[in-house]
Length: 167
Ligand SMILES: [Zn+2]
Image 1 (cartoon, protein in one colour):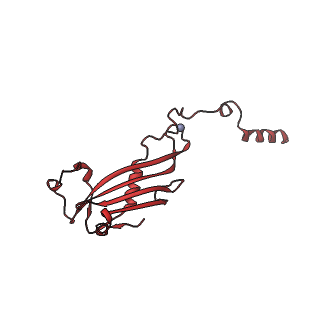
Image 2 (cartoon, helix red, strand yellow):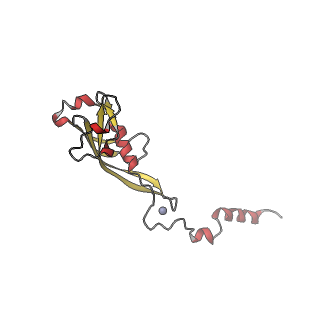
Image 3 (cartoon, helix red, strand yellow):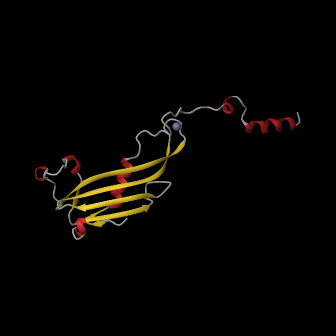
């Protein structure tokens, strides 16, 4: 996904670029391409970015160690403060609208580019489950009767062979 040159956004209707995508992300191994839509809006002294996307990812269950497929869905928005390359003075951030200062910790140079692909990747990573369980009632590792009672099939071949060997 091409990075967005921030000043270009101001020339678009409503300062908004909408990107529909269906692609694999490097560093994120997914079964299906990540499909969704991202909207980036220039609001004067900040960017408003929003993404809605989903994909299927294979995870390893923390409890039974089996692999399972998980639908990873993300729907989030963020504000990115635009700066001249100087540190931000929190006093200068207008607290009109319903902006919360903690949501504006990320900054971008206003004449620079916004790497929209990396931003979407970060949002997907943040949605990865902390605790990975194949199902809510996963019983953990269980030994099947064949593993506990029956002799291993690989040994039976050796047993048969042993009968054929001369004493
Ligand atoms: Zn499990």
